[in-house]
Image 1 (cartoon, rainbow, N blue to C red):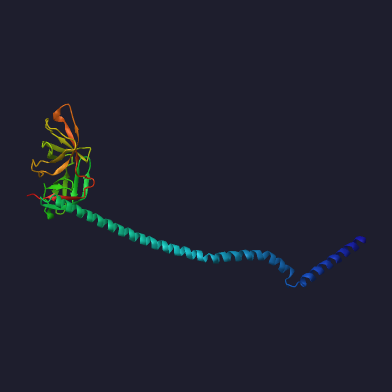
Image 2: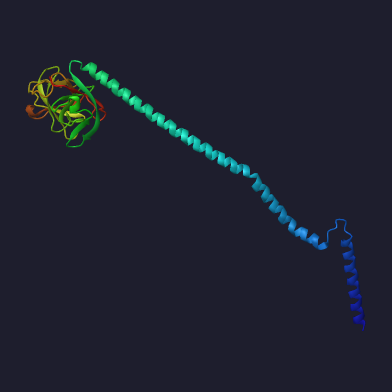
Length: 271
């Protein structure tokens, strides 16, 4: 009996407390219910987070706009760079043409005693067994087989075949080439032949036993044999190689023409 009264008293007390709490929240000045207040406490942080992200995204609009502008500027710079490269190539072509014209003038002045046809190298075959070049002038220009070809520094070779617009030239460094020559100081006759393992030197052979070969001596065409005119510079003596038999000694002749860099030539017309 006592327990029932006690339980009833607690129930009345709990009811009174609940009613007081409801009255307090009902009279809240903000007019927000208890449950609304709880909801606000839960939802507000989420809303604040979303608002923060939105503001960040909105602020990045300028960033994306700047990226677009930078991309357009980069494309413009690439275009200008391409145009500058094209202009540079054109200037280099003009420079090359001017250098070729200058070489032609120098050649024409240097070999004014000959009637010549000017041309330039368009192909070359510098291998172990064949050292030939192709020039851009042919029969239409008056070039014929057997004509002598010279460069700014000296003898290049002779024409071995001709088309209407091109000519093939066997150079003096070709292993099958043979040039009758003389040494400028002693006037002794020798023969210069191409070497298998070099495109910069010749081997001077058949040196007279009593000839005094001097290092640095100039070697010129002798005019003997009728292939090359007399007096065209071939090269200079680099060294003399002695053997047990004086008849077999020979000299290494460095060619006056640099065949790796040869670009402009003159073809001497036959008289």
